[in-house]
Length: 138
Length: 218
Image 1 (tube, rainbow over the protein chains, first blue to last red):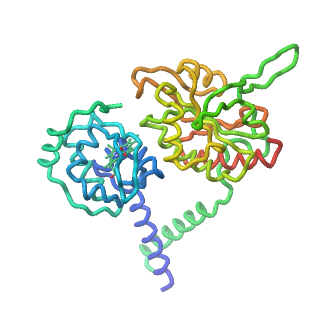
Image 2 (image 1 turned 90 degrees about the vertical axis):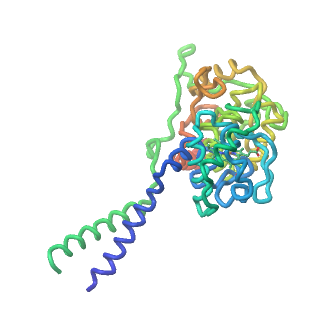
Image 3 (image 1 turned 120 degrees about the vertical axis):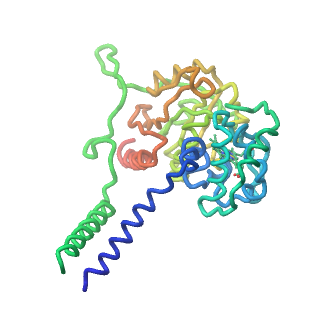
C-alpha cells in the first residue's frame, strides 16, 4: 500500500524532531547556563579564542585537572589537539562539588566524546587539593 | 484502509506538508518593513527651524594595532558598532561568535567595517585587544576593537550616541552592565538598524540589511 512509505517518512521525521530537542539531563542544563556561551552549544569552541570540548584530547588526558579548571578558571597556555590557547577562562565558584562532577561527566561523554565517567570521590579529592588561585571568580 | 490507519495517514501527510512549507519559505524574516527604506533611528533635533536626524558624534579611540580611529576612518563606509569587553563571561562570547559572521561575510567589501568598543578600557589595553582579535582570527582594517578612554566616558558615549545600555552595576560581572545590540550605522553616521547580537537569526537580518543598504544609497 502506498501509504506505508509516507508513514515511515513521517515517523522518521517525528523521531528526528524529538531527537533535536536534545539532552535535558542535569549536566546539559548546567553546561548550557555556565559554559555554552564560550564553548558553544555543541562543544565546538570558537576559533583560537575558546577551545573546543567536543573531540578535545585534553578532556581525556587531563582528567585530574578538569575539576579545578572549572572551579577556579585558568589563565595559562593550554594545548588542545595540538593547538595553543591562551585567553583566560573565568572560574565558577558558585557550582557545588556535585555539580562540577556532573558537569565533568557531561562534557566527557557528549558530542561524540566517550571518555567514561569520573567517580565523585575523585572529583571531590581534586577539588580539595585545588591550588588556590588569584584568578578566581570573575 | 481502516479508520485508524486513515487518521494516522492524514496526520503524517499534514505534518509532512507543514514541514515542507516551513522549510521552503524563501523570504527571510525582516526586522523592518521591506517596502520602505531602512528607518533612521534615534531622536531628531530641531536647529534653526531645520530637523537634524540623530547622528553619531565625532570620536577618537585607539584600536588593537594602537592606531587612532576616528569617524574619518569610516568615511564612505557603513559600519556595525557594539560594546563588549574581552573578559566578559556572559553575552560577549556569543556576540563575538556572531560578529565574526559579519566580519567574514564582508571581508572583501571595503564599504563595510566593524567598531567594537571595550567597556573595560583599563584592562583591555591595545595589547589585550590584539590578542583577542588574533585569537578570533580577524583583521584590524575590517574590525577595529577600541579602547583609550575612561569607563564613564564610554558608557555615556554609548548611551547617548548608540542608544545602548552601558552602565556601572555592582551585580554584573566586573561591575559592567551592558546590552548585546549590534548597531548598524550608515555613511552619514545615522543609525539604520538595531539587532540582538547574541541571536543568530537577528544577525541574519543584520547581514541582509547591510546588503540592502549597500544596494541603496548607504
